[in-house]
Length: 273
Image (cartoon, rainbow, N blue to C red; front, side, top):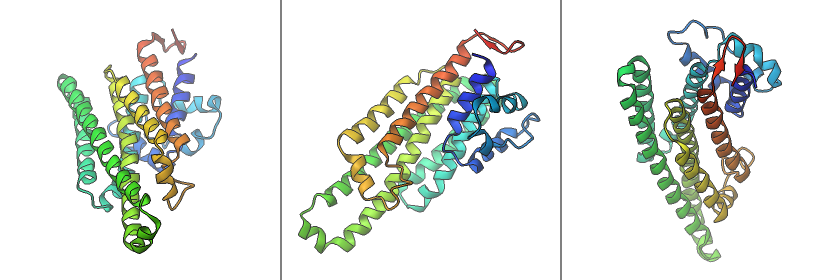
């Protein structure tokens, strides 16, 4: 497979379901100090074009170079996290708000690592540990919110009726926080996978853990429970099939990037060996 074709497929996979404005924010962040990305990338087109039609954009913006593609993907998921941050701050949960500041810290550390190669190894390892802690904390919060909703859901009908006004308000609050936690968790796993792959760290266990967690949520009926209380089921994050698909996408993207890095690339002839 050609280098640009592989890069085009990975780019399309990465921006699937990501709003064009979020992609553009990532592009603008990536432009900092670099001339080759000063032109606006038409992500809304790239997302729907055939892969062959994407190739000119890959060449034009030099995204066939692994380091450029990875830098964009890292910026992309920081931008995705920023779009979740506002929701995390609005739900007034101390742990979720601490996640926002910790992700900002990871973002600053990654920028420092890029500009200071001598300190890069330690900075990257620190970022991976911080992201790992974030995923663990978000899983803990998710489990706590789901437990609260299940306890309310399993009450006898007459008790639920008597306390319905208070309980439904509590359910709404838990749903908002749980949804923010789940979105944040998926973005943290994405960042772990991409940063780890870029710096040749073993990230397979983080992806395996995420896959098992989603499988457990689905198997024990928790995803169905949360979806039942979701106000907007069509656009809900609590969709079992889509959640499994997101984890598979993270794995496929990580494997694809690793292949690019480990392969011998002939850029002159646009060939991966």
